[in-house]
Length: 127
Image (cartoon, rainbow, N blue to C red; front, side, top):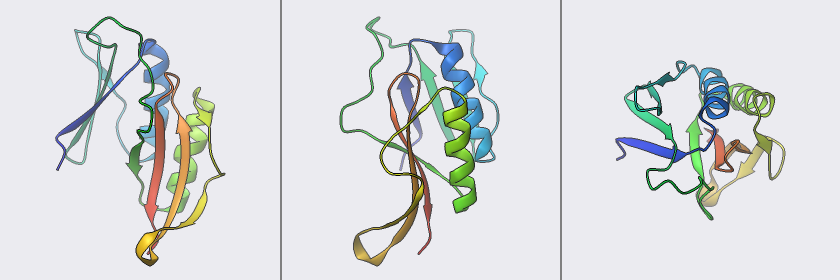
């Protein structure tokens, strides 16, 4: 359904440290900073981009928005979360763990804010 996701950041080096750590914890590659200054991550057919806002305004976390990163196990979610905290992210909400979702689904989730304040989720569907 999505071709790519782009988030804003004012501090590109801090964003690269954070996203390199969290994306590599999920088995993805280190990001590449393109000539125009944006960071690009490509993995499993998806593209994730971080850049300073085009309008020149400060980057802000979108109120009510969460970007989920798919993991292959609860352990990978935990590694994603730990890497994010170690790389300048902020632990938010409940600790990483199981959550009961609608329709009888069971999820293993962890939440962080990146250095720019964007809300992120490490996501694994248990059942």
